[in-house]
Image (cartoon, rainbow, N blue to C red):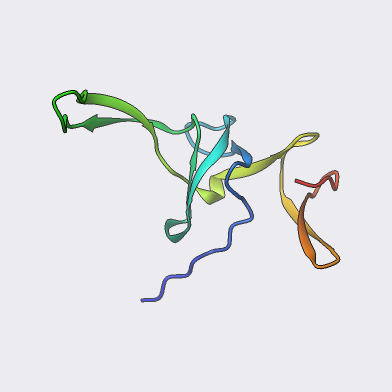
Length: 107
């Protein structure tokens, strides 16, 4: 079975908004992109409780809250002017620049 790895239009440090799921409407910064699973880790979004085992004498065990990854299809990039938008591209010489589909501003 061959798995396809998708090229993401979103990049690390982009501000995104959740468009589906329990955290719909929340905004956050991209912390990590898991390309093989099409999932993205967003700061402060999709918080889940996780049981953590005490590893060393000084470590604290117990239940901690961590961010879980969201599927890339449930996120949209946020333009400074327009809000959540789709991404377009503009070729400027030999560079490819991401632009906002609504206002045309560089993302």
